[in-house]
Image (cartoon, rainbow, N blue to C red; front, side):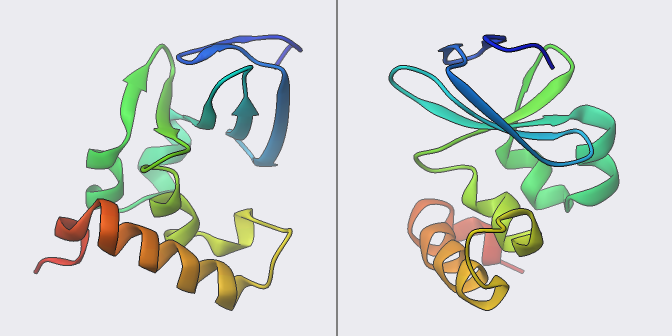
Length: 104
């Protein structure tokens, strides 16, 4: 993934590879996660996939409301905090921004 790549939110200023095919990018004003479609389909639930937005060869999860579904399902992809705390914070965010995620 070359530096300064294009994203749905503009040109990336930073990018971190969190796992195979999983990238966290920031731009001047926004950011989020880019997950290669094949990787997303292999590792995320149907509910999480429905929250992501297709963009080129990626499923995207914007930082404000969507990317916490990824960290809820894969807290190990957020290495800066204990997995249990990541899961808790992600659940709170999901319950606020995507309450249907928890519907049966």
